[in-house]
Image (cartoon, rainbow, N blue to C red; front, side, top):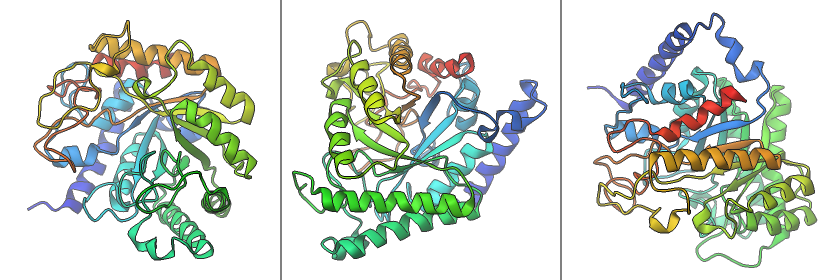
Length: 385
């Protein structure tokens, strides 16, 4: 009987062996030449692989563009991916994934192939987004005690990074909260408007934890603040700056045209406005586009026909063209990164909180036979860049 810990070790060994093989096949004599610590990355071509460990445990097997079964991290590395994003929940008792141990495995696999890492602290036991910012259950009793709450936030952030440092797994970028359009660490129904005295205190204290661990470990760790949709970032960062939330390096955005006021013809405007106004780097850390409208399981797909853009059909070519054009828009506006959200969330016999299968199976970077779509070729731009 193979236990989960055994599977984790096996995966890590496989990743190391595949790295050696990949370097040999590509004529790379010195693997450190591609190490992110030894090169300047002008643009991040990223993938959020938070679901991979779970999908593999559910039986998912991934194939590259040639239809050959291959370690999924090696598929992304070989395609040109240079950044892996991974989410972290505080104590998700309802799942065995996206907890600390799961994140350790993900970062190990990414770093084994010399890819940079963006660690996404949700500061919740479940999904944090514009509709909910649920405080971890362990902190709920202190929700109205700002002095105690900010120290719980600091200690958790610091200790998590300190533990990762002991494993030589520090991330390159830390995201303070996920889609924090509302005030962070709330309970139940969201409170509006944002209480900026509370919000700024909490965010700045979490940032201090990142700065402190980076200083003590003599490492460079950049800080990102993440907002859903560019139009919301315009007012959010204005208010944040007015309330002394300024010590961050990256503006992170979710950009899904279906939910945004901006389309591909004008989204460059908020991109460039944010960059020029706040003198920060900008990365779209969540986007996706469907390669089909077919739904192959009982989990309804989130991106339906209303997510389609004129000129970009629900096809592999349409998906690729969307990524190609969005990359150009971000880069021309002065942005420095694009991350595809959950490109591996394929359909399996496992269930989500809502249904069996995947709610994203028509918008992954793998077709319904789990073979890489044309959209995967988007990452080859990293080589051209």
